[in-house]
Image (cartoon, rainbow, N blue to C red; front, side, top):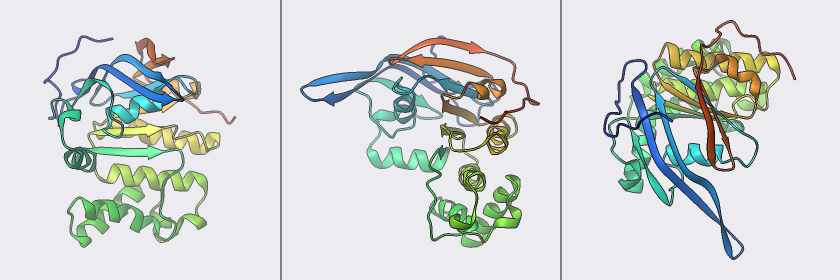
Length: 255
């Protein structure tokens, strides 16, 4: 892995500058009378403007790693420096929550949408939490939905949307905050090739055009073509870490 330079992460870094650095992450879960070590001293970093793929089989520790990096799951050992915070896990729970709200976007495979809210309301609600006025929140939400190609579906509820459209609402909700770090956990697993391609291109754009550090966990090798960097994790350890040149014209074939 790269040499760590703690304290050098930046909120608004240029492309290639560190957004997040972690060192020595260990996470254990109790299993009966013993413990299972899911992360075994992992070092990790992510840079502004990069789409980083974290790949590995089910049970490899990749989703646990995302949870530890984003302040959702406290590791037993190790530290995470993120943006202007030296060691995220030294903050109180409330301040970690505020850090996530202000700086991070999340996209999950299950979409996590509210059934009773329209696409516009899904996005507006998050922006109001950030302190935007109702009018500004609505304008920015509509712009984010237009950016993901859903300008014509603003007032539809999830039940009226396809799987691909739901995932695009979830991406619009994440991108509307203009996050410096964007976490995506298996964002294409429930989608066909065509919708998966739309989603991965939006993640690519978040890195290239918005300058976000995009960290995408997946077991789908087809997504590697869009990545700046591919990290393979297995049995709680990083096996390899390779930089590559992304192919903006890659085609995601259907399963």
